[in-house]
Image (tube, rainbow over all chains, first blue to last red; front, side, top):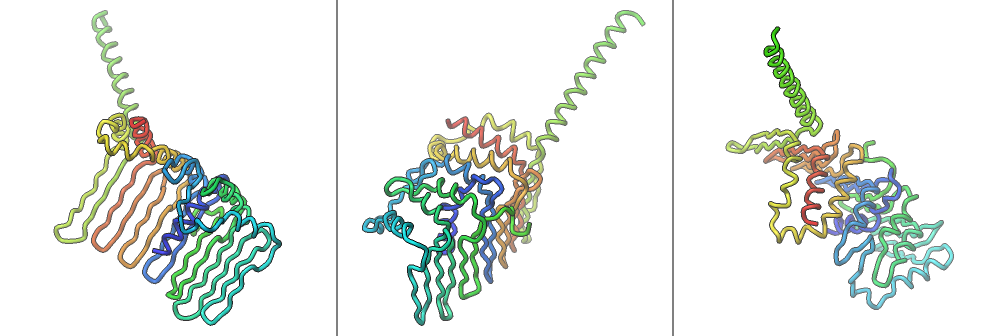
Length: 181
Length: 151
């Protein structure tokens, strides 16, 4: 379930990067029991997203109703992170895990390495311009279309997850239309 | 050859030309529209095993009547999504052949792809095989007709 939520979130945030016609968003999940491969042209999502009119999404802007975040001004938090120099902001190292959150060379990076039998390894690499664009909408809104435009020049991995059971999740953008090509 | 016979031959010739042209046009229409195929094979003793093959232009012929067969409640639910579905159909018609989704497990494989301009859905499991192949052009027309009928 967590895996599919992750995929849905990334599709919602980054799929509409359809400005660059030859870019493709790939989601690849491999496991012992099942392999899933999804290939979506960004141009397709760019064309479709503005046409989606729902109570939560209009013209590529997503409204957030998450009351858990009422006490946290995520945009201000992001602005604070954005304005400081490159560096490692969070480092956690203990017996259970190591966590590193950093800003480097125009990217927001998160690396989690859980130890033990059930440990997961997670790598997140998001261009800062994408997050900037995402937060340029009004209060309680995310400008997904703008984020996608900002993502237009990016090629490479966005998220990789390696679970202890051997399952892997990889989400990335490149110019190949499918994994084999 | 007398005048009457000549006139009769002209009429026969005209009918033959018109008939040939109509047949040629109809053939061209069918070929251009392609075919729709649906194959279902249930892998057990009493299971269904059939293949339906039909010219896709039948879908094109049916599209003007799509609006009439949709219940009002369904229309209300569909309406907000139709512009997006319409945009999706237009874009899918334009892009090159590709596998959009592939799921493979020990029990089942599912494949959704665009192949030679056709939407192909293939499901293979221990209990059944389902294969659907429809020209994207027909899918796009159907969606546009749906959009127009609801709008």
